[in-house]
Image (tube, rainbow, N blue to C red; front, side, top):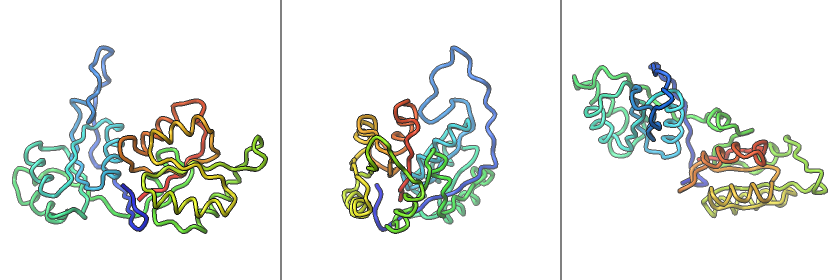
Length: 244
């Protein structure tokens, strides 16, 4: 889940390329963690949103993935699975990334596995890669958010100047903050507390803009983006990502 006071995003580059033969017409459905015979990448990341984004990108590039949430789990899975590569977050609970790397490189069974360190930096490519028109890392300055919205010059000729903004966040405090920031600036705010509700509201109410948190339970922000882009009635709807 997201919080008002904390946030992190990331970048990565993988030196390993997958070599996957084209699937036959009668091939079985792809497993949830990627192509069945493709190179395996062990994703070591305790943040669910970051882990989900990484796995989606890797699977889309032709890899299989396995996730480890803790350093000790990463070491055990590396020894058991012998992945083709490892993406490693440094800030982990209990056993941090530096200790994980030390143990992997000191073990003959895992020392040759390429390790890609994940950097904790602000990176707008996270949201833009999803098709968002803008991207913020929480906490967000209200003035900056309003200024960016005004730059978009969003108008709906059918509503006499009214601009509807669908805000999607499972945290009540974040929704309350956004309402307090947007309504005095003249926006009509439509709050949604989850992904499924957001998809339904987007289709039925046709807002002029969606402010979307990525990490939500059950139906995530990633799922919301996919659903809106797949539906002709919401495909062109602008999406602005607000994530932690």
